[in-house]
Length: 412
Image (cartoon, rainbow, N blue to C red; front, side):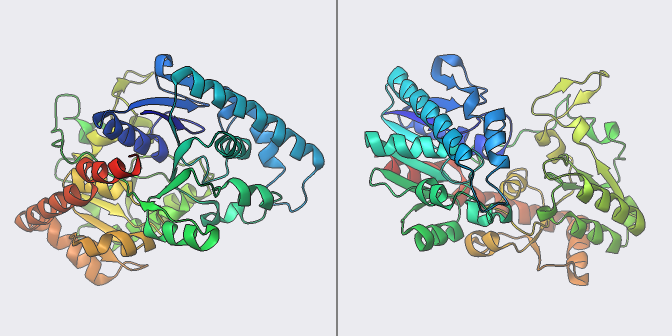
């Protein structure tokens, strides 16, 4: 089939864009052709259509969003502008389908989280009017986010996020989302967890990545503890700071955070920096040295990828309070690094019973957690057995081969 992926953006390294690329690779290997419709795009114009109004950051969508959240009354003008933008995007979707002879649409989170309400409405109406086959890939439902709980569009949320249509199949990334979709919408779905290409061996340290430690000011005999996430409150990074503060050789431990703050403000980052100072923990935020691709910055310094940094880590911390799935956890398994994590709900329900060997904290760091971390940092043989087992299990459950077995009947 000719399959058309639809979202507000297919650009950069956000989770939706990355997971969609994995789906696309698998579907192409199964003989399908894939095409892209979005408001922001990294894809070639020969197989994509970029419509700026479809991007959630477009000024018209920003105007609408400002007037529908944290209020309960909707101005008629807002309704009118939602409809106008939706009708325009529906026309663009039709043009996309006609241009590339699309036979199946795959809305990527566009019918899930309402960051672009007119786009969700447009997709829903288009599918209802054409009865085209579609598979909606759901990452984050609106009911999972407090910021969407008070709103002036309950009618649209009920209609389009996600819709109930006979020609639409649903795919959820975790069991909790599956259950809530069934409870709230009466819709069955397929469980499609996030995956990683475990069939491809991890790259080793090369000439470009060999000097990561020295470039970020960390000695070879220091313990590099990597927090491979953005700086947002739900990541629970204060627990990583507490862990290092409780360790006997804490002066040798350097907590390195790979990604910036900004998405949800800088207050949390300021709190973490003050906490680290009070606890005597060496905290390094290296987002200014981490990029999507290897390159030189304006000062002529190397920019490394997250993969370059992973290879130098002695331990990965993942103390998240909530995750939709846990991509960073799969990355740690892929690069064969020991992990300490918080038992967030999706991990407990979907991942823990698979048999992975990780250090688990349950809401807070205990003395036993610290002792386990110190043990694996000193016992290299134990660590090797642990990470090798995790790699084998992750390949079995979360590799491309596993994804292919799920997608084949979903699109048949």
